[in-house]
Amino acid sequence: MNAQQKEFSARVGRIERKARAMEHGSEARLRKDGLIEIRPARKPLRRFVPVKLILLLVVLGLGYKVFLLGSLGESAYEARLAALEDGSTAARVGSALMQVDPVTRALAGLVAPYLG
Image (cartoon, rainbow, N blue to C red; front, side, top):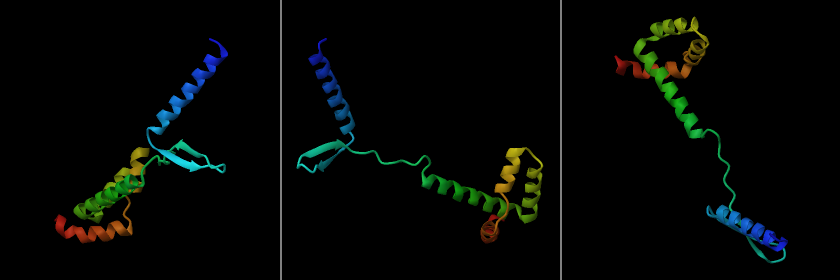
């Protein structure tokens, strides 16, 4: 393969790569010399974990705590937490996350009459 063929193959490769990138959108820019330049659109930055997912998990966890505290009562709930504190590392972490906080206590007081 001579130099012209190599140069042509490289150019075709660049054009094909740019065409694949432009399948997902493009942006037009006006350069200082007046030439309109079309470039592939930048991909938006994505978070590793969506904020909505984290918020949903927090709300579900709080709801679970409220349900348990409201249905068991505070003394039975505290007894179960004390049993968890004597367990493995995962159980101790769960116990720390499930501690009664003011929000959980207030919400449990609201839903306890409906839970029996």
